[in-house]
Length: 436
Picture 1 (cartoon, one colour):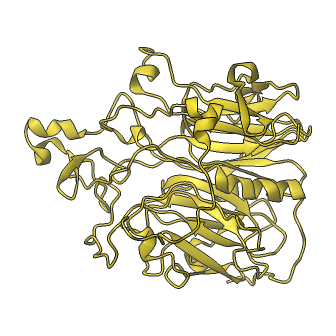
Picture 2: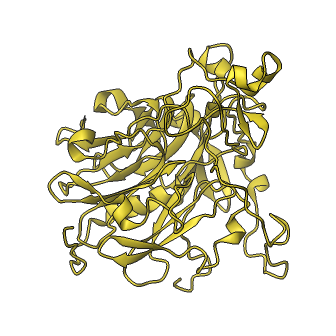
């Protein structure tokens, strides 16, 4: 095992660090509870169709989501959405019946100063519907809200040209062309977009021109200068290979010949949509930026293409071992997580299992969703917080140095209280300004 240089204090450019931290708050969100399923058909030799752990549901000492918070805790935040223009945003992701996995997760948020006026603006990603994909209805739209100050926001989506009108699954912000204006990469099912900031309040979709119009099911992307050439590179996880012309079984097939004959997926005896287990996963994509502002796919050459086809959900470039090089963490749904350590020669070492972040402390893979990177204990080493599916705890991985991590979830008090909940986006935040 190569020795990791823990003592190196080389620093990345401030912009790269900011983007690595920002991506933790723009990971995928969702608008509905996401059932997991265990099915009978289209199974691989290793696993059935679905995403739930096969072990029994845990018994709770607490009353699930009731009574797990302190009723005497002070109210620190006030929800003022209803007083702003953001209250008019309506997120859409398929039909209410959720017959297919595509309809369950979607959305995302970026908070950034797109117009350089010193006030943070808000971009909300929207989903879509099968009818919209088929041209039978107008597609839902994303929304950009310009901050006017004093909690007033203006919907400038049309003026800025960032409606997307595709099935969105995340957004990552970074100034990829070094012109001083933050740009956006919107991960979509179908074709993703790169919105280049024109500096005049408008954006241009430059994905095709730049070579990053990724096709398929793209999820929580991240920007970072992994090769140290001063140009931001882009990593985009892939989720599931979902074919609209070859749909998996849906819960309503149970009335024909029965669940077993039809291959209908179930979760604890209830028919649900199928996946992700049993469906083929997508590989991941690393785009290296060239001096001319275009990108090349170096995924396989760099060793981060995900040949196993895990179900990628979120990612972040971050220096995990303090050697001055940006490493890469990828959280995967129902499959082990990845931690790639940067070798400094354009390639990465898969250090996932050795590092301890691939599995939880019990040695189980989890249905991981969002990831946050931050030094929660102020020891100078970046730690990871990963959100997971319900009946699985979220995971807090403490950085032990040399690229090694320890699952301290229960020790830190994040065990049983997170078991009942399905987690999505997450971030470390010093909300009380006490330095922790």
